[in-house]
Length: 300
Image (cartoon, rainbow, N blue to C red; front, side):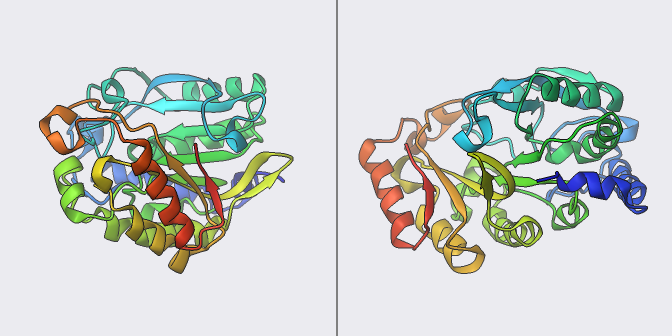
């Protein structure tokens, strides 16, 4: 299956997509926070990202979902900064402290091509939301030099619907987190009480673009994959998330119910989440998903 972005690159409208996305940098509204800062002049919004993409690491990742990692790894690029900045982030040094190095479009394209040369099954863009313009520009350069493996948009789920519309034809696999259905939890943990209402809109857009996840010979090629991290005391609100996916997206949505929550970052500030989950909490989350009718669950 040929990656969708190859056809888009040949389309006369591709440069217009790049131009439109670059326009966001001078009045940033790449995510729902819509800070409206001029990143080209050094102004910083909530994510604190600048005009260049900042990369913390890039390598073949064998710890992703089996359909992404395969036998040769998922070509993972970890972007620094984050538009959500969850208090419990397990990549706190990257997302909050912005460890990493700035790259121009040419260097980012070279990184993508290097991962492909290593045999990776895909290019896995981790936390790409605040660097979409830079990624799209680099993608164009990489396609010109022979990039031809799927692009995975691995995000926190707090996305701009307008930006997701523009990404139509550039992304093969959307892999958003579905973090919270509770506005209270979203407010306390990432200061985004509108998280779930926004997530519901963008999940529909993502699924409308790529459909249910298609796997060929064990490797994901195109579609939607949703991650749901189980939290202590069901603080995330798993039932509401699963009901929405089953009822308004598709019962065939590939959902990874994740058990690796542990206190990280600033979790100590909220006693309710300052512990690991129990086996019973995880089991209840899985049974909840099944009871909602979801048919494609990845569990631990």
